[in-house]
Length: 87
Image (tube, helix red, strand yellow):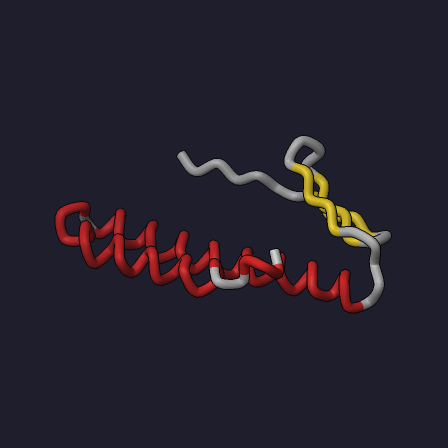
């Protein structure tokens, strides 16, 4: 993730572009969803980058996030990754 830090500011900017191009035609619900998802994506990417940076800075050997196991392992600590489905 550390080599893809450029994605953090791109997520809200992509939301801005989508809202600017299609917001008037798509409606208020679309604009709200895109704005929230763009900000949420940036926050999640930033959190992931900080966790990975912390793991490397403190000599931890690995950061493994596997969607098949739905578990995120950072060194000796394990976190459960929750998948959200929005209807």
